[in-house]
Length: 236
Ligand code: NAP
Image 1 (cartoon, protein in one colour):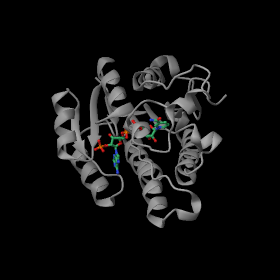
Image 2 (cartoon, helix red, strand yellow):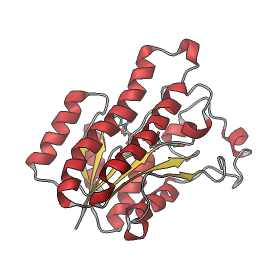
Image 3 (cartoon, protein in one colour):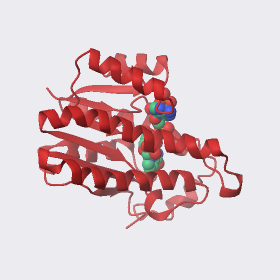
Image 4 (cartoon, protein in one colour):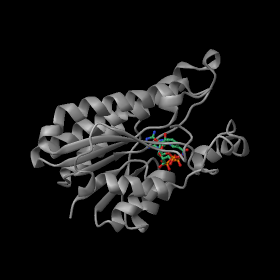
C-alpha cells in the first residue's frame, strides 16, 4: 500500500482529497495546524499530524517525526493554503510573507524532502494546488496570485529535474470552490461571481479530489509539468 501525504487535510479541498485517496487504497497522512484538527483526522481514518507551514521549526519537527516513524511518501499533495487579501497600498509585509511562506516556502520544503524518498524508490507523484488567480490575477490578491504563479513555475522546473525517475510533478488550479476559504472571504460575492462561471455554480471539494485521484493514477503516468485547470469554465 502506497503512502500519500496531504497538507491541510482538516478542512475543505484537502479533506476531500485525503478521503478520496483513502478510498483509492492509499495509506493517507494528513496535516492540520491544531491538536483538535489532528484528532478529527485520526477519527476519520486519516493519520493526523501537526504542521504549520509558516514555521520552520514546525516543518522540521513534522518531518523528523515522519522519518523516525520510517514513513515513505509516494504521493505528496501540497494543498494547505491561506489568503491574506488586501489592496497593494494597504498590504503589510506580514500579509505578503505569510502567503509566500505557506504556499511557496512550504511547497519547496515538503517537495524537497519527499523527493529524496521518491528518487530512492524511482516512483512518485507531487501535486501542487495552485489557483485560477495565478492565471487571471485577482484584485486584492497580488500576494496570493504571485505565490500561486510561483508554485506553477516551481512545478515545471521540478518536473524537468526528476522526470527520468518516473516521478511526475503537476499543479491543479481550482477556480471558486465552496470551502471556508471562499465562505470567509468577505470580498467574495457569490451571486456576482457565479455569473462569470459558464457552469453557473461554485465547484465542490469532491470534484477537485476526483481530479487529484486521476493525477495519482497510472492513467496519468505521461502527464508532467502541467497545470490542470478545474474552474467550471471561469478561465479558459
Ligand atoms: P480551507 O478550507 O481554508 O482549508 C485550508 C487548509 O489549510 C486547512 O486544512 C488548514 O488547517 C490548512 N492550513 C491553513 N494554514 C496553514 C498553515 N500555516 N500551515 C499548514 N496548514 C495550514 O481552504 P481550501 O479552500 O480547502 O483551499 C485548499 C487549497 O486550495 C489552498 O492551497 C487554496 O489556496 C487552494 N484554492 C482554493 C480555492 C477555493 O475556492 N476554495 C480556489 C483556488 C485554490 P487548519 O484546519 O488547521 O486551519
